[in-house]
Length: 66
Image 1 (cartoon, rainbow, N blue to C red):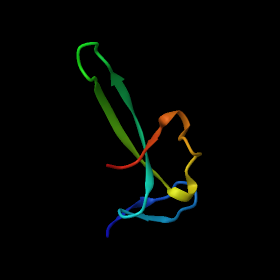
Image 2: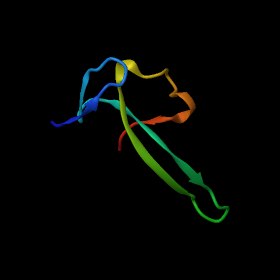
Image 3: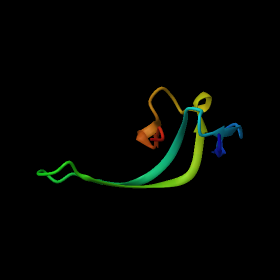
Image 4: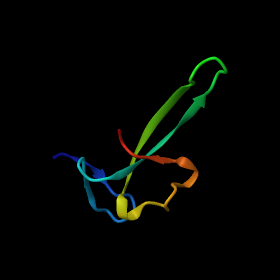
């Protein structure tokens, strides 16, 4: 078990075994002939599962880690 980060809302420590959300920013390009290319950059901010924005993250700004 290793520490991933601290929840941006409640300051709880988040480890790599717990479900959590990671904030990313980026662009997505979708050419007609391919699957598309995604450039995502993590901001370093995390939310624990209890502090998720809602059942659907706002504007898809958070994603579950792989």
